[in-house]
Image 1: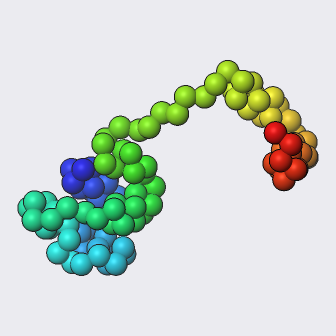
Image 2 (image 1 turned 180 degrees about the vertical axis):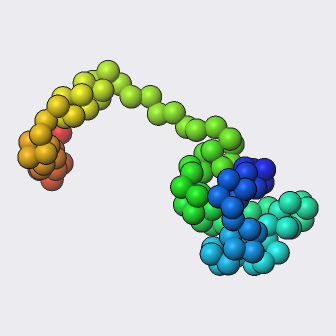
Length: 104
C-alpha cells in the first residue's frame, strides 16, 4: 500500500510535505508509514484516494474491484446511450418516479 502511495506521489510530482499539508496529515505521517512505525488510518486512505482520484480498492490491494453487470443491465445501458439528451432526462425522470412510487 505504501508503495502505491509513493508511486502516486512520484507520478504527480507531489512531495511528502505537500501531500501531508494538502490533506491535513502530520508532517511525519508518510515517513512513519515508510519506516513501518505506523499505518495509514482509514481516514487518511480515503483522503489519499480522493486526492489522487484512485479507488480505495486499488490503493489498498493494488487491484480494482470489478462489479459484474448483468445482460439486462447492459441492455438498458445500451438503449439509454442511444437516446438524445432530452429523452435521457425523460428516462431518468421516469425511473425516479418509479422509485418514488415504490411500485416494485
